[in-house]
Length: 212
Image (cartoon, rainbow, N blue to C red; front, top):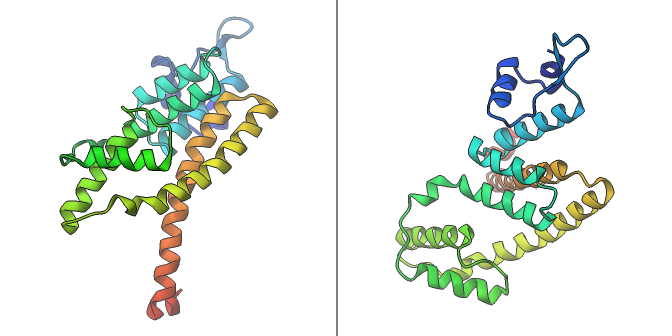
């Protein structure tokens, strides 16, 4: 199958996406013996692969994101909210952690100080509350202000990201590309932080530096 070659995906995987309704069916080719697939199918497969392989989203989350991409009446802000919720939904490990009493209130106060407009039921609030609880159990005491430099860095990077995404949407209006960029930049940020940590470790350890 030509689509398999171009998308660099096995035929069974493509057929699975077709059965699941994640990929629209092909069009009948002249003669009716075969189905044809075009650039629209290729772009959809690239997006699905980005969401699953890079974003590590479940098929359920992928289905919700694709539905949002196809919902032309949904504004860009709503589309970004959907992918944000999908990315949070995959943090299943944190969901199993307990949340110490008072942690949520301290996180709420922290967000108020930042001046951020975040929904009361935002998954991010619960994630930070669980992280704060874990830090307190680890050290015996944890100050919520430890999150301040991370919040400042996050806002700085997100401002750059939003400007880039807005420019991309104005240029070609491709909603699928917008979603893919959000997921890819999220993964890039995680990789860069880990490499920065590796750089500092290598720089601080003479033995490591010599081996490098």
